[in-house]
Length: 102
Image 1 (cartoon, one colour):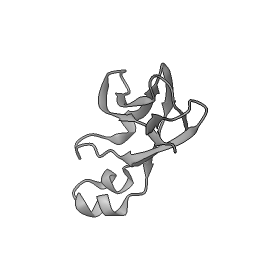
Image 2: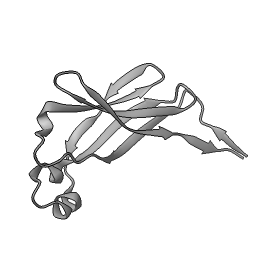
Image 3: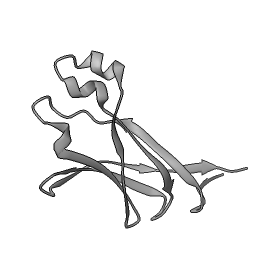
Image 4: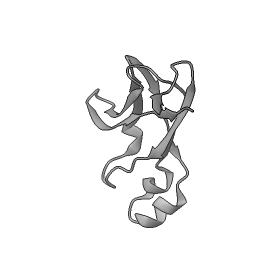
């Protein structure tokens, strides 16, 4: 049977977010919202393959993000949110963590 993860477990969420090449990435941040708790993502990590895929966008080569020590809360789901420096935000996606236990 599949059960949701225990709330005491920590997880790491990783991925890639590439903005249009006309958007300066330093005007944005990524946060993960998890049951009312917000954590800043470390964004701008090297991503050579993505850089090759989008050669006209210099920021693409540094588009990976990571959030460590993520706790499962709020039905074990979290939201990835892009926030600009004026406070506007966009929901980029949701993740649900499941764990199979025997």
